[in-house]
Length: 72
Image (cartoon, rainbow, N blue to C red; front, side, top):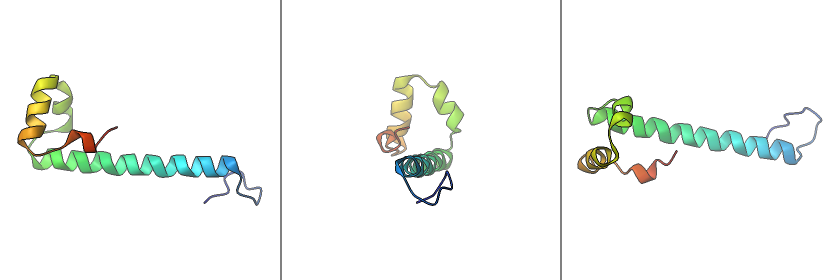
């Protein structure tokens, strides 16, 4: 892990902040993977935001994209 406060020890603060950083990196990777799947299906991720819920669900289903795998 990291010693963020540079005191020479890794304490609870350092561990918590390090875990938060790794969680954010994982979410970013999921987001990028989801956006790549959308682009390969021929849609811009912003367009998906403007769809109503039923239209979005139908589009994801038709293109074999599982939105539950990308919960963010």
